[in-house]
Image (cartoon, rainbow, N blue to C red; front, top):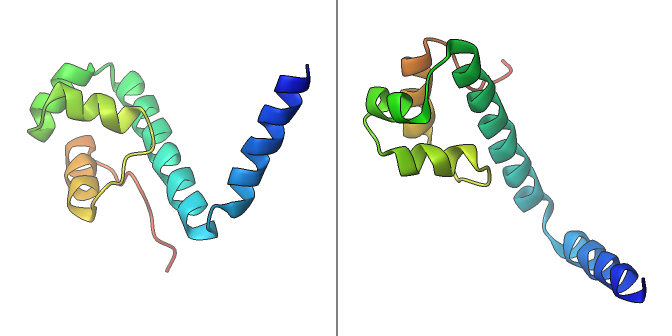
Length: 92
């Protein structure tokens, strides 16, 4: 029990010390991964097939879906093009 509390305190300390922009980047990365995963399931497309369509490896797609990936705009544009809809949107 004491270890659990100490672990939670350490986790909270690390979280508190993490810059806001890093926390935002991680949140966005996981949001993109979740949206991509949901879209692939909706379309009934496997990671292997999607990788082929995007022109990358299945391992890369697996990494994307794992969350925490630092997507480039080029990669996001390619994903969106293959899906036929934007994976992200920018408020104007």
